[in-house]
Amino acid sequence: MTLTAETAGTLELWAPYFAAGIALIIGILAPLLSARIARKTAERTLQAQRELANADRLWHKRAETYESLLRWAGEIRATMFEADAPPPEAVATWREHTTIELPNELQVRLAAYASGAVYDAARFFTRSLEALASSLLADLESGADSEPTYPAASDFHNAIANQMTSLISDELHGVAVPDHGRATGSINLPL
Image (cartoon, rainbow, N blue to C red):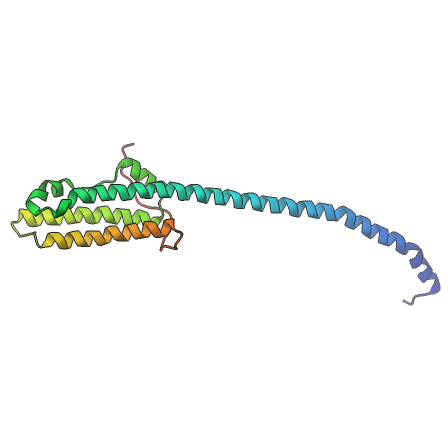
């Protein structure tokens, strides 16, 4: 197809209308697209703000829960290892701690707010304390001299307590901790 003078004249005649039509279409579509982009941006911003607010609330709940856990752990350890009490004075305390349960309220808060790593560390702390009490009690009741075992056992559990404390501190300070997700396990609550 060749461009003739007649075709060129027709194009010249209609060119301003085509340009105006294109400008009209752009004028209609631009605000619609702009509004859609603005809406999507606003939705993303609100979602990000919600996520930040939820993360902040969770951090505060975790901090309160972890403080309670550390307070409880310190109290329970203080009763078990009172001033490096020699074994005969500690028998009643050890017998009392062969089964250790976190307080119900603390169990609920740990299940709800703790990271999986801290939840597992708290469970390991209580189970190792139970095993330690049972072992020391068995040594004493069997007539074995548990006095040399006592300081080593106390040191071993100090290491476990320090590991749990470091994990909590790292998590609250934003240091990445090895975590496998949410807390799992069972809690023993009367329903």
